[in-house]
Structure formats: structure tokens, C-alpha cells
Amino acid sequence: MKRVHLYSDERVDDLLTKNMKIIQSKEVFCFSLDAVLLSRFVSLPMKRGRIIDFCTGNGVIPLLLSTRTECPIDAVEIQERLYDMAQRNVALNDLEDRINVYRGDVKDAHTFLRNGGYDALTCNPPYMPAIGGDKNKSSHVAIARHEILLTLEEMIRASSRLVRSGGKVAYVHRAGRLADIMTLMRQYRIEPKRIRFVHPKPGIEANMVLIEGIRDRKPDVKVLPPLIVYNEDGTYCDEIYSIYYGDRRRE
Picture 1: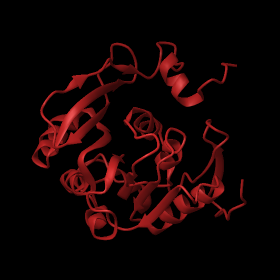
Picture 2: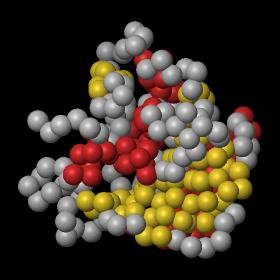
Picture 3: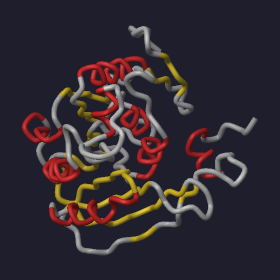
């Protein structure tokens, strides 16, 4: 594992899989459960094909995807600081030959990447509209959380441009936006195929949704069993524990 430069506000954390490490900063960007769930939910080609991640942040999703596929992975991030962090994370894990990070606007990705050339696309986009909600004091975090530079429709339109016919697109988002997401996916020729709701605890309504669609396919959606994050006592449910820790034994 290579040595890479760290800023004063950064730390290196364990990604808990394949001995991977990740640079994070509470002042700029830290990944959360939604990114991990998306990386495990999406259907991926194993050896042939190409994958892309939009709004990659510090590159956590491409890093995790690289443990599930041998295909090359591209990633797009608009913020200079996060783009730099993602590049260093790729180098830290010796993945320069498999993951390419591009600094650019997702809305323009079709102009500098393989338009219609991807077999799978992931995105953990900004969840909240630009108006309303509490804006974070950090511009980096505000842009990652609010639709300041990228709206839901712009993200889905860009997705449809990048994936081939038959290519798969997977998102994680707030459960309350599901109707908007499905409407826009169909508008841009991505047919919803798999949906899974994520619930904080048993008996509590879903706060996240994982959704996967296929470009240019016929309607036929499957709603998967719900994913529960925490047991009543506050410990991770078995499936979440397995997603995070794999074969590691509980201590």
C-alpha cells in the first residue's frame, strides 16, 4: 500500500474489506451507510464491461465495487478537493490500473466519457433540494447533500446518456423521493426493475431506498424484502453486519 499525502483535517480509516483503506475528513467528506449499501446492491458484470460512478466523493463506491468485479471503473466528481481525495484513495489502494477518476460535471459526462458505453452505473446523489432543509456550513458537504449543482432529473438524464441499451443503473436515495425517481427513470428510458427499502429499525418506516433499473427494457419491477439496519437494542442486524464486516467474527 502506497504512502499518500494527507491534509491536516484528514485521517485514514479501514474500509473493513480486502485490507482496503480510505482517506476521509469530517470537514470535507465522510462516506456513510448509503454508499456501502449501494455498492453491494447494484448488479455488476464480472469480467467484461465497464462501470461508472457519478458523484463519487472520496471514491468509496468505486473502491468497494472493485472488490466485486474485475471490470474497469470510471468515476466522476465535480469538487476539486473531493476529486483529489478520490485520486489519492485509488493510489492508496494500488488501484490506478482499474479505477479512473475524472473531475467534471455529471451533466456533461457524455462529452468526455464513453457516451452509451457503460454496462453499469451507480450514483449516491444529493438528496435534498437546493431550497429548504438545513444547509451545512461546509460548502463541500452542502454540495454533496443538496441539489445545488445537480438535480435529480439532471442526474437521471445523464445516467441514460452514459449506459448502453440493456445497461443497469442503480441509485440510493431518500425513500420519500421514490415516486419522483421512478417517474424520471421512465421518462429517460430506464425501466425500474429492483427496489429495496431500508428501515432504521423494525417497525419504523423506511428512510432510504435502493433502486435499480435497466435501459430500454419492459416494465416488471420486483420489490425485495426490506433491509433493517439496527436491532431493537441498537446493534447492527445480521445482514448489515455482514455487509460491513464480511467474514470477520463479532467481537
